[in-house]
Amino acid sequence: MKNILAAILIMFPALSLAGIAPAELDGLAADAQEQVVEWRRWLHQNPELGNREVNTSAYIAQALREMGLEPRTGIAHTGVVAVIQGGKPGPMVALRADIDALPVKEQTGLPFASQAKGEYRGQEVDVMHACGHDAHTSMLLGAARVLTAVQDELQGSVMLIFQPAEEGAPAGEEGGAELMLKEGIWDETLPAAVFGIHVGIGAGESRVVATPGPAMAASDRFEIRVKGRQTHGAMPWNGVDPIVTAAQIVLGLQTIASRQVDVTLAPSIVSIGRIEGGVRNNVIPEAVEMEGTIRTFDPAMRESIHERIEQTARHIAAAAGAEIEFELELGYPALINDPELYEQMLPTLQRVTDVARGKPHTTAEDFAYFAMATPGLYVNLANGPVGGDPRFAAPNHSPEFDMYEPNLEIGVRVFAHLVVDYLQGRTGSE
Image (tube, rainbow, N blue to C red):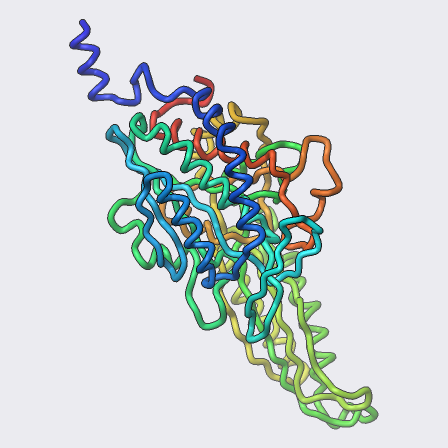
């Protein structure tokens, strides 16, 4: 009988009676918390912009080497990848954290506040981890510490992805998740699933929010140049007014989301964020430039809106005797959480902490590229204690943004439990 049972466990390792106990992961995460905070504070004090995270990359690689791992560096400029090879056969899963900061001057007053400088669009700027990427990176390092401690019992392997340039690569450069995939980090082995965490976005009172299906929007940029004919402001009939035409285009574009696409299918947003034209009160200028953003969740709707923006602007301009030049720059695709993976891992999340079902968020994330290549689940982690604290009320990208450090331990536990439960084929309630 013992021989038969042993043979079954060899054939089906997910049925192993031993496995890695959830309580063991929780204890390891608690033990790692002090180190995770130390990592987070160093990263916060030493931020770097996208594709320039040289010191950040070196710091991460050294921390991984101290765990006995062999990181690969220089991927997509400054990315770092390492693999924890489990002691038992099984699939590979991936965990991802972004490592870049923003051109923001910090105003938190923290003793470890950033004083860093960087170059952005040819100018020297202050640099800050204003979106929580320091927290993401330290939580992934914490998860690496936990998972290496149980490495011999892992039924598969774990790829740790420290990704640069999530906030966008410098002008004229490639970067981020798309470039990491282009450079082949998954060419040898495609992970069976990929997991990620973002702090401070849409979590509310719940510690974790998870959204099945469309979770974050596609983000595209467009520019329209309205070309009229310059004339005296007192005699507008002698020219073609691009300012009035541009105003009509702005209003016309608002009918796309409200009148031209199926609002019951998925939400969409068309916003103008910049409009420039003219130099003097009594001169009607020759041209007006406007720039805007498009946010969508459905790929077909995304393409349709692109066409409708150009069509709407061109026809309105033609009716006024003007012309337009239209430029579209594709950004990140929509981040789609795999519905089956969501259902599979929801019990795990619920075992770790309290979880709320989220709704689509109109910010964008290039984790979307990873989730397009393999089933992905990207969750949001609360920033601040239950009941709130005004010190942690500042939104992401604010100069006052700070991370509620006790929640770092929750993030480490989420990463570790997702990996172990997925590899062991265990449901979260076990």
